[in-house]
Length: 64
Image (tube, rainbow, N blue to C red):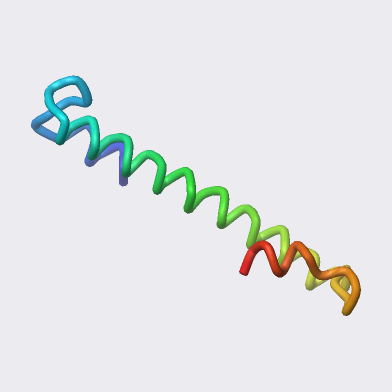
């Protein structure tokens, strides 16, 4: 969906400060969401495999 929004926009990253801010902010947000999703998926797999315990739960703490 983000690709469609980027391709249909009327401005480019080099046009103005608005274009630069828009593309950088949405790009960093997308990267943040993707890394967070991967991290939460890893924690979910750890829960299913019973790898989390009272003394070994730092990955859950970091994801939260």
